[in-house]
Length: 328
Ligand SMILES: Nc1ncnc2c1ncn2[C@@H]1O[C@H](COP(=O)(O)OP(=O)(O)OP(=O)(O)O)[C@@H](O)[C@H]1O
Ligand code: SF4
Ligand SMILES: [Mg+2]
Image 1 (cartoon, helix red, strand yellow):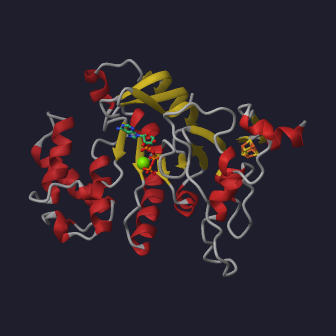
Image 2: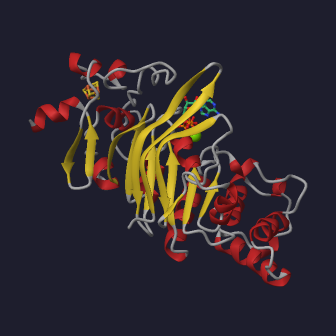
Image 3: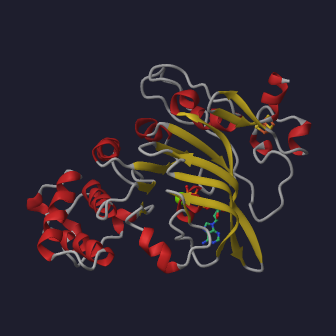
């Protein structure tokens, strides 16, 4: 049994008099101790997928199909009291842009202490204060800085403090939504190194959401590529992005385009081609392949029939008519 098993999950948002499907029949697994990266352009449904695990979706969202099992607990259909027992203790979430979510008028140690007390009302004060210092130390913040206010921290330190807070109740799964966005490159590298080391030291599984392929490559064992609410490719990080110093093995034209749009700092100095156009409007019905309008290899079948999911090698799948042609 996997730690997290998501099957056929669909998430719809009510918008005006209609609705849009942000996540469309997505399935994925995370094993204990594994790090899975979810990658895709803005608006592809990454955050909606991540928020659905601790059931923190906004009020206009509905889970319209599927199942989410965390350590064998079915989360879909649980009531708030049941969910609250699992939030922070079994699954913790570092929100997109969370480093700016610290209370500006409260010292950092106090905010982490409150997170501990909120989830363990019986925790002894002294023990909890000690735990705050341990947590700060764990994420690389010296205990001497514990009494600082958020504005006295750099962006990287604020993100570390948010990660410390997320780990307060020793969750087995950490969901980090764009944990390095808005940080300078040095701080980005430090946060990625921190997430990698926490996986080992805290026995954590990680679901990392990012549009940054190199960030995913540094932290994750496996990768799920999302486009317009659906999974278009999945495999180990090496199967999809290639080994260090080797070229990528991505099979889906969208993944290939994402990789092509990403400048390679070690490779030849060439202008990254970019990816023209936008993902489709999810509030309108889409026939066939969702990437067809932007795909350089699109064929007439692509606009009519949803592409099948093809196994390329063990653990590596992609959904594209081209692959059916090759394998047929
Ligand atoms: N509260 C909401 N109400 C209505 N539509 C929403 C809401 N939140 C997200 N959406 C829509 O759902 C789709 C998926 O959004 P989501 O935020 O999950 O994507 P994302 O991949 O995380 O994007 P980004 O990289 O910009 O964070 C988008 O079309 C978005 O406009
Ligand atoms: S199914 Fe067709 S349009 Fe879609 S990615 Fe494959 S070739 Fe391109
Ligand atoms: Mg997002």
